[in-house]
Image (cartoon, rainbow, N blue to C red):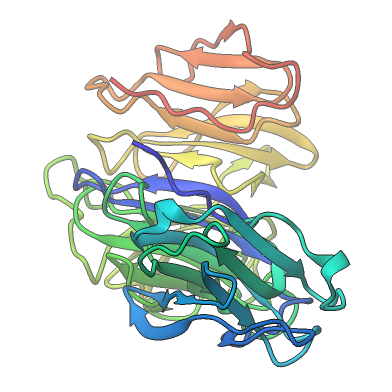
Length: 388
């Protein structure tokens, strides 16, 4: 199995409840990439080659034509050297094993021979693409599918990509928020197909790779949906599945206080009822330290663990009543960002914390006892996913 190489900074990955379904999310920068579709063409009087066959599963499909030099070739060009598309990936359809050379010219570079790069590099903005078979040895035409990123606006966008085959192939990017510079909260339903993502003033929803749309009511004023968790069970329950494709319940945690002085909510009734569950230590309110700083056990809608900043000190906190009350489990590393429960644990107690540059912290007791384990890296540990 060979995974697809994705362009952009995809910092989040979530696996769905159905085998093979995977989402990734991240940021794509569009400042230098006003994306228009390529046309069959060439530069400097060079011979034009290729035929456009249309769109297939989000990819542009092209077929080569034979040139006077006796090779099969495809040449693609935009309307100007500053009009570019971001090349994402290609999939061979027919006879692409005969291709022996790929060329690109990156965005804003003059379209001359000296600007040619001898590869198609995923993630580069380009104004020219070409590929060919061996000159003088005519073969059957090749057919190739090419994916270009459709950038919208300036300043970047948060986007998701969806796969149904364990990441072997991904569908075209779906924009979460235009003009965004960082991914916010992002989580997938543990039962069902819903995915939620944070945006400015709003949580958004998608299902099975669909386009994103606003979910429920707008967030409270000034609330930033930094971290989102969709529990397997309805909030407060250990028996009723939270499996709606259109109305999942969730927890959302902000990196700043909102207009009401709150930082965390449990959200129900299709995203329309916000109940504050802001954690405090000695009257100091906790704020989210990252996009993966809250977690709940797979088998509970009541137990929550979080890593939060309380006035400059980072603490591990837990709740066994869906945030109605909180227990302070002690200070952890200032650069701790990521916490998870072991997925198969039926005790609802086995916690794993990526404790920054310090260690991997494990708790068999829901945070009561913390055990330091050696980190696999000397740099900041930014993720941990315990299974089994």
